[in-house]
Amino acid sequence: MNKEALVNLSGKEVRKLIRKGEWLNDTMGVAEGFTQANLAIVPKNVALEFMIFCQRNPKPCPVLDVTEPGSPVPALLAPNADLTTDLPKYRVFKNGEVIDEPSDITKYWRDDLVAFLIGCAATFDHGLMKAGVPVRFIEDQCSPAMYITNVNCIPSGPFSGNLVVSMRPIPHHLVVKAVQLTSRFPGVHGSPIQIGYAENIGIKDLDKVDFGGPLRIEPNEVPVFWACGVTPQVAALNAKLDLMITHYPGFTFVSDCRDEKFAVI
Amino acid sequence: MNKEALVNLSGKEVRKLIRKGEWLNDTMGVAEGFTQANLAIVPKNVALEFMIFCQRNPKPCPVLDVTEPGSPVPALLAPNADLTTDLPKYRVFKNGEVIDEPSDITKYWRDDLVAFLIGCAATFDHGLMKAGVPVRFIEDQCSPAMYITNVNCIPSGPFSGNLVVSMRPIPHHLVVKAVQLTSRFPGVHGSPIQIGYAENIGIKDLDKVDFGGPLRIEPNEVPVFWACGVTPQVAALNAKLDLMITHYPGFTFVSDCRDEKFAVI
Image (cartoon, rainbow over the protein chains, first blue to last red):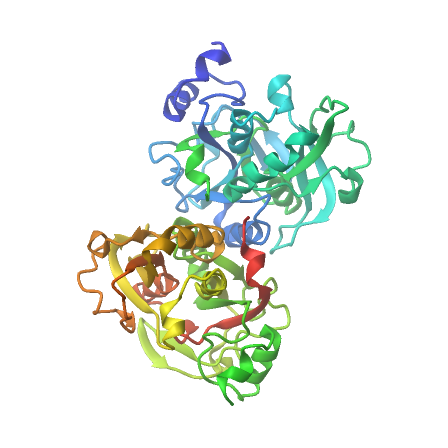
């Protein structure tokens, strides 16, 4: 199946294909306009501390939905979804090490697990493009560029770590527009955290990414940095939990909600 | 001590007076421009479910700070404060019944308690007034008018209940401005949930308030309703916890943060 066939489907239709095993590739650009979310599943005995970590670091960790302990159903974002089967690829960690990258996590599910769905910048990427602000990794059909900064997150319980950011090269005359557009969406990382000065947040070389791939930056463009949903995953890995399950990078959860639902104005 | 002496103090200065027992009255209008917050303290064994209740109902329950379990220090809002002594009056509940209304809760504190500070509309009341939108209960020096609506909150664990709203009479020509101004502050209830049609949310008689007191409404004014921080208290009372402590209505926590910190744009 070609990804182009998935662009105009609804979130529910895409999830059905994923659940049947007919789409096991990445979700970038599918179900255009439907909110995508990052996944982090942790045991209940640390779920409060993880949720407090998210509250203390709302720009990288905007919580969109939390399941009932033991339930894989995200009732707010997609009440008919099942988080154990509806993502195309997962990562399973034990004590901070990847032990599996399956397309179904039914066999790992436990009654004490709590799933968090965390806002993903895909929501505002679509808004930027509609407003004429280019989004390079979509234009070039490659991976977003992500960096671990020297900015410390505020810790909570066993969760701590540095802020991870994604970078978008924005033409000078559209930088303010990009700030305005993304400010409307505090639920999906919101406004940028740094405009132009990579070294100010500890990034020495834009070609050396920590996740994803480097991006082409044109002479008339400024690198703009937004808090990234990889941050809570890094914090959770640092915590070396006995079990943690996340989405595989780029293989996110596609919800029933329209992006505009999360706009505050 | 007269309240007028407290208007131009900082949050820290007001808390010092409260801690020394020199101000044990309400906090409405004190430390102008400093963010005030509602308090809800619950045992750790239900804290995750309470925090999920707040996430599911963000308009009435915007969480501004959560303490480490067992610690009374709100590190984000006021790292030098002590939530057991720094509010002028508390309410202590056992199994949903008020058992005490002290000005200090040191003797009730336990190592398993978690304190939540929840956004309070006082933050945007100040913004409304500065922009020329009258706030009746401040003008008339009386209590805000609050109503229990027929809107169900989304439950979580033992927490459930109806949405409580506060009402402000707004002149017709300023209603849109009031929506715009309060939309900037999703962290303190944000935009209104109903403009004008009280019966649409189950309020039959504006003179019959459930909390506070009724307000004068002029012929050129529209009743506008905002989600209210009493909502999570009602939900927590419905849960009949073995111990729960809240602020006494109108006697809120005064933080070190400036209101504008919570503006998203």
